Length: 247
Image 1 (tube, rainbow, N blue to C red):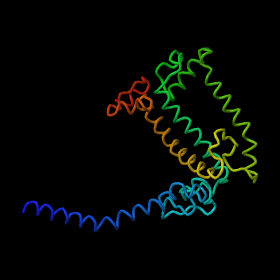
Image 2: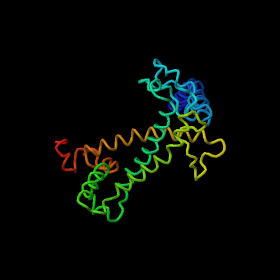
Image 3: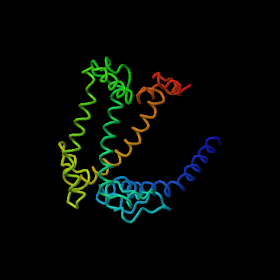
Image 4: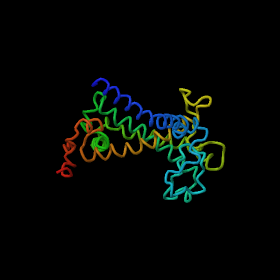
């Protein structure tokens, strides 16, 4: 009798579950395969974000084209009505690329330090490295001229890429952010739209991430991995000039 009761309960449970499963699970799978992938890659970047609206009750300005990579219908401040959209796209892509490099560098400094660097910057990281290098350079330490080299080469890159930016701003065929630099061939064939979308989405995430890393460093004096390793003791500041902020 006990075995029969258990069997009856099991069959009843399976029957109850089957009443919901066919209607829910296949529907979820179809939504993922049909609209989920399209939501992320927009059909491999061909359509990009056409038709998307990040804020349902706040439509994007009409001057913001829907076929640009990463379009989400999001412009609450109406910047596209004040500035040239091509200029805004050029600026966003450049900031995305710089932020991705900065995010990688911020994490790398917690994993490895080049020999001799500690003699100049000590245990400082991120913005602290900048301050230590400038302080050492002001004393005439030639080993601390790295910041001058960074400034020189970034200025050089800005100057040599200006003609390409002017071409875009003057209505030329060049797309914003395009410098024909793809040594690995990641954008060959029909993959360019997909890679453009991935770049802009990862770049936006990197800009937010770097802002958080710098914020945490200013509060704790620790790099991102150091900070994560010190949770929940996140108030253990190590930089003397910010110690008062955490007391």
